[in-house]
Amino acid sequence: MQTIKRIGVLSGGGDCPGINAVIRAVVLDAAANGVEVVGLLDGFDGLIRDRVRMLSAGDVAGILAVGGSILGCSNKASPSRVPVGKDAAGKTVYEDGRGRCLDTIHRHGIEALVVIGGDGTMSCAQSLVEVEPDLRCVGIPKTIDNDIPGTEMTFGFLTAVETATEAIDRVQTTAASHSRVIVVEVMGRNAGWLALFSGIASGSHVILLPEIPFDPEQVGREVERTCRRGGHAVVCIAEGARPRGGAPVATIDPRLPDPVRLGGIGAVVARQVEERTGIESRHVVLGHVQRGGAPIAADRIIATQFGQHAMELVRSGRWRRMVARQNFQITDVPMEVAASGQRLVPVDHALIRAARGVGVGFGDT
Image (tube, rainbow, N blue to C red; front, side, top):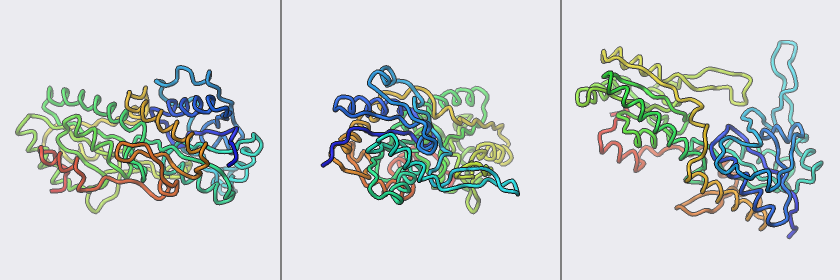
């Protein structure tokens, strides 16, 4: 087995609490074993445009508790779809940039890649393997949505839950003081893990998930019932939630690899609730505040475990594997599992059953 002497590391997709903790673990483990680390800036953009920096143990000192990423992130850079200008009609022209990525890898003597990201990042890594089958890479799952197949937990998720829960706790006191309904919109495009966890933790009275299309009339009835009992109601709704027979609220941004940008369902539901019940309703969108800030202790621990296990995969030559947590143990799965889709909330999940058991409504029955 060939001994790896230089690796590259990048963080693709959006930012997430704990990325720096992962980078720190990778760099410290590498330094202890005589491996050099090349940091690739702004995700795959660093590979596409040859933007790198060397990382030493000194560079990662003190970053365990720091939010964001010292390498930067990008949810726009895609190796196979690089914007190169506009055509005569003003439309963006794209080209396949995977060859440029591989040139950067070879130019800097990078013998293996550690990619930190979600299903999109894993798919991008897989696309590089398609043009260079011998490419050595391992993955580390990152997303506040907790929706990556193959792992029961991603780092960053628990911090996002804590942030959203604290915000909804504050909303609860305002709603109670004014006898209002407040709808809180949290992130979650297709998977409602964040809304489910933070909704339960905050005592939200109604939780609306992408996996359970809701009936606006039923939501109104659930809110009325709650307000009769307690004088106010809080609805926690994922940005990708949608009514039965309808579509999520979204705008189109053609500049993005995924042009559909969700957001606005909270305002729609608040308006519908007020129209149906006559109870004054407001909405709050937590937005990117859920991505920011220092990772909580649990995420620092998971991130450290993930980064160190990734380096074990590198040393053992177990390529195209993604670190995972299953049954509370750190393990790994094939990267194509992570790139195969999204891990959605099962409609019969134990947490949903528990929430229904204590009177939480999901707008469906």
